Image (cartoon, rainbow, N blue to C red):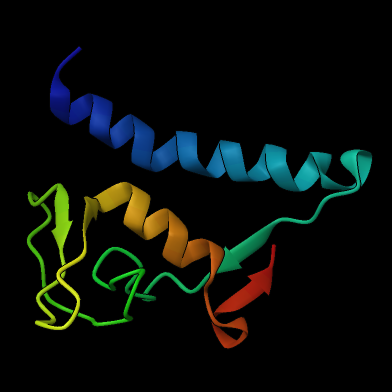
Length: 94
């Protein structure tokens, strides 16, 4: 399988299917599925000080450019913390 066809398959099917299953099972497990606004800058925001900066997609380590902070963390972990603490006006139920 070529890389391009794998990426297409994931973007077209996998994420939708995961979301569909989570929404389907939420009542069974007594949980709720929350969606964060797709334009919320979770991976560009420092989880320590809130500074927002531009970043290339190829950058995998978040290095806060705020001189008073300087926080360094894996970009995905930083984004996960920001998603967990997203403002209520950026969240909706699935």
